[in-house]
Image 1 (tube, helix red, strand yellow):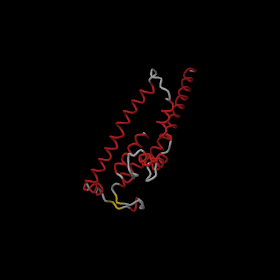
Image 2 (tube, helix red, strand yellow):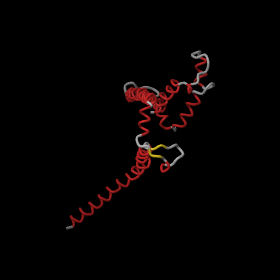
Image 3 (cartoon, helix red, strand yellow):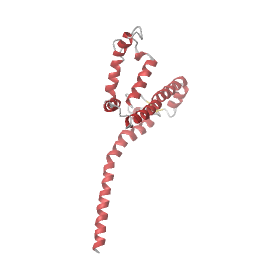
Image 4 (cartoon, rainbow, N blue to C red):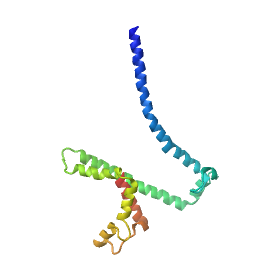
Length: 185
Protein backbone atom coordinates (compact mmCIF):
# COMPACT_ATOMS: atom_id res chain seq x y z
CA UNK A 1 0.00 0.00 0.00
CA UNK A 2 2.81 2.39 0.89
CA UNK A 3 4.56 1.48 -2.37
CA UNK A 4 1.44 2.45 -4.33
CA UNK A 5 1.30 5.75 -2.48
CA UNK A 6 4.95 6.46 -3.40
CA UNK A 7 4.25 5.69 -7.07
CA UNK A 8 1.20 7.90 -6.99
CA UNK A 9 3.12 10.84 -5.50
CA UNK A 10 6.00 10.32 -7.93
CA UNK A 11 3.54 10.24 -10.81
CA UNK A 12 1.93 13.49 -9.64
CA UNK A 13 5.34 15.11 -9.25
CA UNK A 14 6.34 13.91 -12.73
CA UNK A 15 3.11 15.29 -14.21
CA UNK A 16 3.68 18.58 -12.42
CA UNK A 17 7.19 18.85 -13.87
CA UNK A 18 5.89 17.97 -17.33
CA UNK A 19 3.41 20.79 -17.07
CA UNK A 20 6.27 23.30 -16.82
CA UNK A 21 7.35 22.41 -20.35
CA UNK A 22 3.98 23.55 -21.61
CA UNK A 23 4.24 26.77 -19.61
CA UNK A 24 7.57 27.50 -21.27
CA UNK A 25 5.96 27.01 -24.70
CA UNK A 26 3.32 29.68 -24.09
CA UNK A 27 5.61 32.67 -24.93
CA UNK A 28 6.59 31.02 -28.21
CA UNK A 29 2.99 30.45 -29.25
CA UNK A 30 1.96 33.98 -28.24
CA UNK A 31 4.87 35.41 -30.25
CA UNK A 32 4.10 33.13 -33.19
CA UNK A 33 0.43 34.10 -33.25
CA UNK A 34 1.09 37.83 -32.86
CA UNK A 35 4.14 38.23 -35.11
CA UNK A 36 3.70 35.49 -37.74
CA UNK A 37 0.27 33.91 -37.94
CA UNK A 38 -1.77 37.13 -37.65
CA UNK A 39 0.32 39.02 -40.27
CA UNK A 40 0.04 36.10 -42.71
CA UNK A 41 -3.73 35.88 -42.31
CA UNK A 42 -4.07 39.69 -42.51
CA UNK A 43 -1.91 39.81 -45.66
CA UNK A 44 -4.05 37.17 -47.31
CA UNK A 45 -7.20 39.05 -46.31
CA UNK A 46 -6.02 42.42 -47.67
CA UNK A 47 -4.82 40.82 -50.90
CA UNK A 48 -8.48 40.55 -51.87
CA UNK A 49 -9.17 44.27 -51.24
CA UNK A 50 -8.32 47.63 -52.74
CA UNK A 51 -6.92 49.93 -50.10
CA UNK A 52 -4.20 52.50 -49.62
CA UNK A 53 -1.94 52.71 -46.61
CA UNK A 54 -4.22 55.13 -44.78
CA UNK A 55 -7.41 53.07 -44.81
CA UNK A 56 -8.46 50.54 -42.24
CA UNK A 57 -9.48 47.06 -43.27
CA UNK A 58 -13.16 47.88 -42.71
CA UNK A 59 -12.91 50.86 -45.13
CA UNK A 60 -11.29 48.80 -47.91
CA UNK A 61 -13.31 47.74 -50.93
CA UNK A 62 -13.45 44.07 -51.80
CA UNK A 63 -12.10 43.35 -55.30
CA UNK A 64 -11.94 39.56 -55.12
CA UNK A 65 -9.22 38.21 -57.39
CA UNK A 66 -8.85 41.59 -59.15
CA UNK A 67 -5.44 42.30 -57.62
CA UNK A 68 -4.10 38.98 -58.87
CA UNK A 69 -5.49 39.49 -62.37
CA UNK A 70 -3.92 42.99 -62.45
CA UNK A 71 -0.62 41.48 -61.39
CA UNK A 72 -0.72 38.85 -64.11
CA UNK A 73 -2.00 41.29 -66.78
CA UNK A 74 0.91 43.63 -66.13
CA UNK A 75 3.31 40.90 -67.20
CA UNK A 76 6.45 43.02 -67.77
CA UNK A 77 6.35 44.26 -64.18
CA UNK A 78 5.50 40.80 -62.87
CA UNK A 79 8.29 39.17 -64.87
CA UNK A 80 10.76 41.84 -63.71
CA UNK A 81 9.81 41.25 -60.09
CA UNK A 82 10.22 37.48 -60.50
CA UNK A 83 13.59 38.01 -62.23
CA UNK A 84 14.75 40.30 -59.41
CA UNK A 85 13.67 37.75 -56.82
CA UNK A 86 15.47 34.91 -58.59
CA UNK A 87 18.56 37.08 -59.13
CA UNK A 88 18.75 38.07 -55.47
CA UNK A 89 18.18 34.45 -54.44
CA UNK A 90 20.78 33.07 -56.83
CA UNK A 91 23.37 35.71 -56.00
CA UNK A 92 22.85 35.26 -52.24
CA UNK A 93 21.79 31.74 -51.35
CA UNK A 94 24.25 29.73 -53.45
CA UNK A 95 27.35 31.80 -52.53
CA UNK A 96 26.28 31.90 -48.87
CA UNK A 97 26.06 28.12 -48.67
CA UNK A 98 29.43 27.71 -50.40
CA UNK A 99 31.06 30.37 -48.23
CA UNK A 100 29.56 28.88 -45.06
CA UNK A 101 30.91 25.43 -45.90
CA UNK A 102 34.36 26.78 -46.76
CA UNK A 103 34.58 28.93 -43.62
CA UNK A 104 33.27 26.13 -41.40
CA UNK A 105 35.90 23.77 -42.78
CA UNK A 106 38.57 26.45 -42.45
CA UNK A 107 37.78 27.46 -38.87
CA UNK A 108 37.25 23.95 -37.52
CA UNK A 109 40.33 22.34 -39.08
CA UNK A 110 42.74 21.79 -36.21
CA UNK A 111 45.62 20.97 -38.55
CA UNK A 112 45.62 24.44 -40.11
CA UNK A 113 45.88 26.22 -36.75
CA UNK A 114 45.15 29.55 -38.43
CA UNK A 115 45.94 32.75 -36.60
CA UNK A 116 43.23 35.35 -36.17
CA UNK A 117 40.34 32.88 -36.21
CA UNK A 118 38.54 34.74 -33.43
CA UNK A 119 38.91 38.04 -35.28
CA UNK A 120 37.47 36.67 -38.53
CA UNK A 121 34.66 34.88 -36.74
CA UNK A 122 33.75 38.21 -35.14
CA UNK A 123 33.92 40.05 -38.46
CA UNK A 124 31.59 37.55 -40.10
CA UNK A 125 29.19 37.37 -37.16
CA UNK A 126 29.10 41.13 -36.54
CA UNK A 127 26.22 41.87 -38.94
CA UNK A 128 23.98 39.52 -36.96
CA UNK A 129 24.59 41.57 -33.84
CA UNK A 130 24.06 44.99 -35.42
CA UNK A 131 20.59 46.17 -36.33
CA UNK A 132 19.67 46.11 -40.01
CA UNK A 133 18.87 49.82 -39.97
CA UNK A 134 22.36 50.64 -38.70
CA UNK A 135 23.96 48.60 -41.45
CA UNK A 136 21.70 50.23 -44.05
CA UNK A 137 22.75 53.67 -42.78
CA UNK A 138 26.39 52.58 -42.90
CA UNK A 139 26.09 51.43 -46.52
CA UNK A 140 24.18 54.58 -47.44
CA UNK A 141 27.13 56.58 -46.18
CA UNK A 142 29.78 54.36 -47.78
CA UNK A 143 28.17 54.48 -51.23
CA UNK A 144 26.95 58.07 -50.90
CA UNK A 145 27.05 60.39 -53.89
CA UNK A 146 29.35 62.24 -54.61
CA UNK A 147 31.60 62.12 -51.53
CA UNK A 148 31.09 58.62 -50.13
CA UNK A 149 34.23 56.65 -49.32
CA UNK A 150 33.52 54.17 -52.13
CA UNK A 151 33.37 56.98 -54.71
CA UNK A 152 36.48 58.66 -53.31
CA UNK A 153 38.41 55.39 -53.39
CA UNK A 154 37.33 54.52 -56.93
CA UNK A 155 38.14 58.01 -58.27
CA UNK A 156 41.51 58.15 -56.49
CA UNK A 157 42.44 54.75 -57.92
CA UNK A 158 41.33 56.03 -61.36
CA UNK A 159 38.85 53.17 -61.74
CA UNK A 160 36.13 55.73 -62.48
CA UNK A 161 36.65 59.25 -63.81
CA UNK A 162 33.81 60.95 -61.91
CA UNK A 163 31.68 59.96 -58.89
CA UNK A 164 29.09 57.28 -59.57
CA UNK A 165 25.61 57.45 -58.05
CA UNK A 166 25.18 53.85 -56.93
CA UNK A 167 21.59 54.37 -55.80
CA UNK A 168 20.45 55.79 -59.16
CA UNK A 169 21.77 52.79 -61.08
CA UNK A 170 19.75 49.58 -61.18
CA UNK A 171 22.85 47.37 -61.18
CA UNK A 172 24.61 49.53 -58.62
CA UNK A 173 21.69 49.21 -56.23
CA UNK A 174 21.27 45.51 -56.94
CA UNK A 175 24.97 44.90 -56.33
CA UNK A 176 24.86 46.73 -53.00
CA UNK A 177 21.75 44.84 -51.91
CA UNK A 178 23.25 41.51 -52.96
CA UNK A 179 26.48 42.20 -51.07
CA UNK A 180 24.59 43.50 -48.04
CA UNK A 181 22.36 40.43 -47.87
CA UNK A 182 25.31 38.12 -48.46
CA UNK A 183 27.31 39.77 -45.70
CA UNK A 184 24.43 39.90 -43.22
CA UNK A 185 23.21 36.34 -43.58
